[in-house]
Image (cartoon, rainbow, N blue to C red; front, side, top):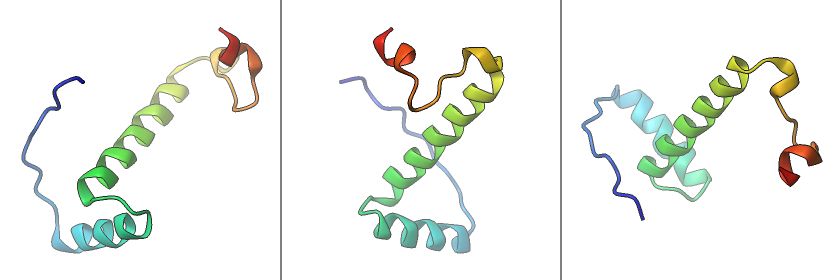
Length: 66
């Protein structure tokens, strides 16, 4: 397993509370929820950077089959 990067993150208390409630609803830790949200944001950004013909949808078998 790859080592994980640790760093200090300062959050507004209200934002932390909102993340805490959201994480609880999805049965994650706050750290896990932050990582999940960041991964989704990076994936969405990467898809926007690709030209439309290079983007694959969830039902695109060519993307799955390679």
